[in-house]
Image (cartoon, rainbow, N blue to C red):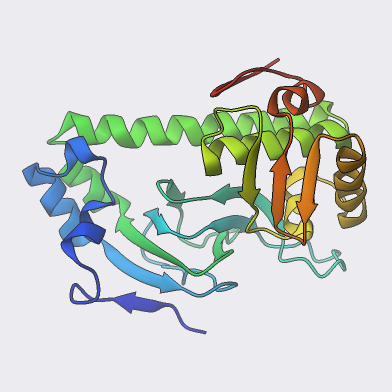
Amino acid sequence: MATRMLSSGDTDRTAHCAVLPESLRHSAAASALLAIGDYAQLAKGEALAGDPAQDRFVYILSGAAKLVAPPCPSDESGGTGQVLAFHFPGDMIPVLRPRDCDFRLIALTDCQVVAFPTDRFFDIAEGDPAILRWVLTSSLQALHRSRHRMMQLGHKSARQRIADFLVSMAERMSDARSRTCRIILPMSRRDIGESLGLTIETVSRQFTELRDAGLIETRGRSHVRLLDVPALAQVAGQTCHLGSVQHI
């Protein structure tokens, strides 16, 4: 299915402004940025079309997506490739033009995105330090998540990786501030495994063991209730003060 690009008639002013934080929406630079954004509707399972001519910032307006590297030629598991990150509304993602390795942004659910050519973005944003600070903050958060994930792959057990994954999803998807919370995971067990360096069988087994331990409840593939977020964070090797998880 081809990516459906949205015209200005398909997206109202509210949708355009949702790209930027409230405090940045009324500057001249913000208006110029919104004018260069290419809006697109992605169906579940669809990859954002690559742009061989330029690097882009891609902002998630709605839905969820995964950033993947292509599978190795020897990989016969049937997966789409190594999952590098999961992204949700409010995330700004650098997507480089296809080079030696073609990283792809694939929709986990139906979603809307807006893509900015990075060169034009910086030309406009350099006139407004607040916008540059916003992009830098978003990039630093993504870098922190990437570094933490690398630490997981090298030093944490399968149980710790799954527990950490669930706590982080609760933080990002529900802004968990209580001992229990519910989340609906848009990604498959295979996606989770590919992001954590685990087989799908290991992922399923760890979900079962966490459920048997009374830490989570599951309903179907997607619905998960975290019964004790601080205890789950402890399993993951974190300290948890509700609303703020610190990695240890």
